[in-house]
Amino acid sequence: MCGIIGIVGYKEDIGNIILKSIKSLEYRGYDSAGICTINGNKILIKKDIGKIDEVNKKVNFSELRGNIGLGHTRWATCGGVTKENAHPHLSFGKKIAIVHNGIIENFHELKEYLLGKGYKFSSETDTEVVAHLIEDYYHGDIGEATRKALNKIEGSYALGVICTDEPDKLIGAKNESPLILGVGKGENFIASDVSSILDHTKNVVYLGDKEIAIITKDNYKIVDLDGKERKKEGHAINWSAEAAQ
Ligand code: GLU
Image (cartoon, rainbow, N blue to C red; front, side, top):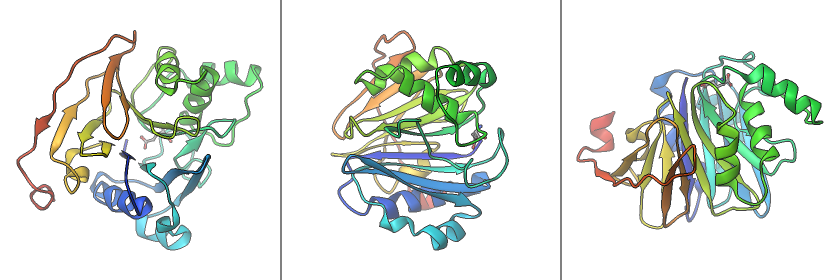
């Protein structure tokens, strides 16, 4: 279980901003790293095995442009340490990208179900099953598709989800893996821990288990797995990124 960052509404240089944030999650330990953004109507992904600086040297994360993106550090639990298994993962139709920390316990049976429907897999991970399942439920509302997919999933997850058809929406979801929501001005964040977003905002909403956050650059809404809204206020953090380090 390692690190996640997600940003929506960022104005410039998102590749470098996400890179800096995942570097602040390095202390959690990891074996691979990756970042994706939406540019135009395409998801751009760069990822590989190794330390973040080594991966960055190979792929140059700063080339990634867009106003929305996800970053991930992986600690392999399902599938070996390979580039294909590194996150982010794309759905079969390449519309949806996800990052995940945790373990999906019932992924074998979900994989059988999806293989039966014609989905093809390009990694050995449990995570890719979630990407395809969200796509299977997708009819124009990525928050709803994620909620429906999570109702079928058993196990632990911190998830970040983005979709090319709704490039203004970032989805975060949590169950038994850490994930917080950072509320900025014209930009919002999800992250595994508070310290990785303190450069951007000190206003944080703590997600509970089995909660989904539907986030745009100016707003957020939190729902439970039945789709019922949970009103949650932000908490002001009164320590700095330096103090966190
Ligand atoms: N189970 C996922 C994988 O093996 C997530 C690993 C993690 O928590 O970093 O890819």
